[in-house]
Length: 507
Image (cartoon, rainbow, N blue to C red):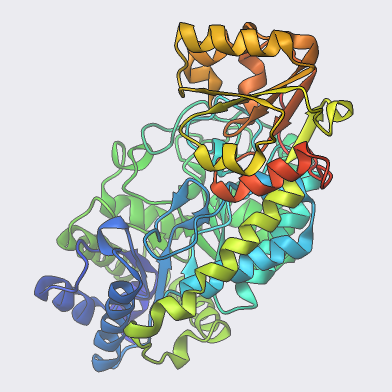
């Protein structure tokens, strides 16, 4: 390889549009990037995505280059860039609530199956950040949970499931983005943990990922002043974090990748060229430079690294070491043996029917009763207060003797009065909430009910309890997908136990 080709292997590039236009084709042919990330503008449906990935790889082969890692953000839950024609997954904290590593492996396996079905071979997941700050604006529901001892075995199983089925996992955002109150897409957060504090909590899921031989670890744009000699640098650009902590202290031998270098935590301080050079100096193998940068801007960043090598600022031996790791990973995950896929049969390969059944099994194992187990099964004289917008939930659970009250997502005063009247005449009241912190009317509804005989079922955020009265019963489903409805009803009717273990701290 020429120096330019070696440097290009280290870059994660992107382009706009659902097809490869002439400028993009020329860019790929000229620079031969090693990794291409597909963003929402590139993604329409399984057939289109398959045609796109076929086209990308064929351009590289025709240029006598090696096939690329083609990456996507498919975490499951709220970050799922593969949408139309793919399975909708619950948030990862539900999976952790199951404490079932077999289900976690099956989840990783299913993700890989769907991703590989359209020619993608690298997933920018799982999120290994602990949910240690519920006010975190960017991690939140993307996290697998609060407790490292619960999260670590689930992370391992997800990685194993994904990678055993030919998709490289990327564990992120090292050394932990969970305890921030700011978003590194917008600003540069600071976490003042000591290394000992990190090792006792935040680093545990990452160490688990290393044990699972995760193909890549993504480094966050966060300053950790207790760990860095230069606290003007984010972790992603810090030799102390990338090389010192991750590579040397923790012994990670896989690929180290930056978070996107066009995020405001970086690009308000560094030019793309300077950020790319500093990222390589820090010890990163792969650099995400894309999304908001033109093709010319991405080319300029690659050229800056080439120039830095030629000037002696970066040693070519360091580039060689990164490229060797990248090519070894491509061999490990079968990238070098790429073959075209049939776009017309992509939906069959994805198999959403089987995976939707898996989603329901995860709900059945993960729905958690925080308090009020003794209230179940529900008696005949139950007031069942359900969002009218969720007719399927009502239909699946409804018993002839129950008093059913359908209310709006933001119930009116009249609806609250009807619900209160029904609950006063009932032995037990069940009421569903969904992100109650954002709905004063939901809060008023629950406050109007007799707390000593009311069970709240939080369909979305498990933190609804923080803004509601302390009712006798509280159940969390973690996600509001329809696949939760049948398990919810089975638990309420005493047909199945609530098996979940609370995976997020509610205090």
